[in-house]
Amino acid sequence: MSKGGHRPGAGRPKGSRQVRSSASTIRAAKASGQPMPLDYLLDVMNDAQQALKDRLSAAIAAAPYVHPRLQSVAIQNSRSEPLYIQSELGEALKALAEIARQRP
Image 1 (cartoon, helix red, strand yellow):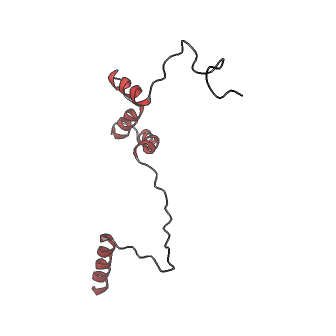
Image 2 (cartoon, helix red, strand yellow):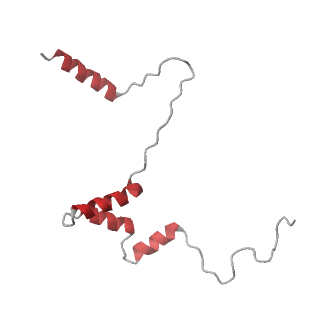
């Protein structure tokens, strides 16, 4: 079995077109003046003259390209102690709860 070098039929065929990178394809599309598909969907979504059904469909189609999906992350504690997370929001919620308790 050969380990490398010239093999008949291997590689890109002669005369085939150059494969463009996605960045160069995007630059070429923007330079041509044609709207990108995502830009078109966002324009439809933000156009108050469009029917609500069309605007919602455009928003649903554009969402995966604009907002990444959140993934759950498992937090593991090496010790068997409870894990406490402190944040400014937590302190604010505690303060609001205290105010609510003091109201008649």
